Length: 408
Image (cartoon, rainbow, N blue to C red; front, side, top):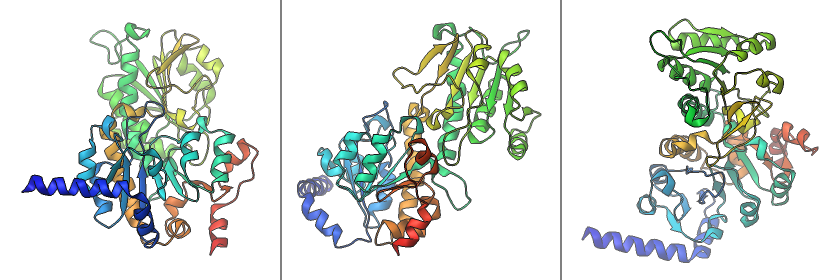
């Protein structure tokens, strides 16, 4: 009997997917319900998915519609049946996904994906500053898409929940990655991160005392490395000291002292996050040239441009390059190495956020009611609203708050 019920449910679901026009009409008549689309990620070897089945179930239980492309959760080890049973519509028609009123992605969309969008929709995805082009922004303006950068979303405590959660994953992954890159099989110095009796441990510099820096510090100390943390925010350094619970070598980002420490470092982890635009570049190419041969740089800040002058965006297929004898690891979606964990972390933030803003009639009301969501907006209905992007591409930018006020 249970098998028969499941079969009937699947047939009903297939019928819904085969008649998208009728479904679109239904949702047009009930605008307080959200219509969410989740495509398969085709860029940067992205393995994560924006919503896991549990997150989908939260939304569909409240009457919202979720349509997901077949295989979208496969690389995070969620199959299509998991999503179907959670109430999502699973389809192989990619065009139907991009007709949704809100598109959820864990990698920036390609130009081809934006072309599939009819327009006047909301896009929630990472921004990845180094990958942004003028063509990309012009396409968003042309289609009047409201684009929200995941990394700039804020919560009620004025912190960045997506960044905080994924930063924890990135901080741990950065240290484990660096430990492997130090081996001779990865062209490193052949140094064990923690050392052994009679042999000093590797020296690790961590630039930034935020969440990435905190998790990286704990991981490096746990493996026995000698750690030094740099940040210009004294309160962050104090908080990190208290969090670690042990005396820690800390310093402000004094260029002279930083250069001195870089010369003897085995690993340098860049973990500086900008609240609005590009990450500050604190390590020049000249400084990198003075580092030891076979030492390792892991630039976790690369998704915001990187804090090393020598950094270049890499992929999981080709995650490293060697410059001036120093191994660089500059993958912007480092958390995608552990997609099951990372997807759950993203979904646990996005699903409740969407539920809390769902009782509205349009995008303007959604943004007006949620300052944290509004903080992530960098394009709004034909306008660029991020100051850094406006100046970077010599495009006029407008304050999102003024635009929303004029909309009512």
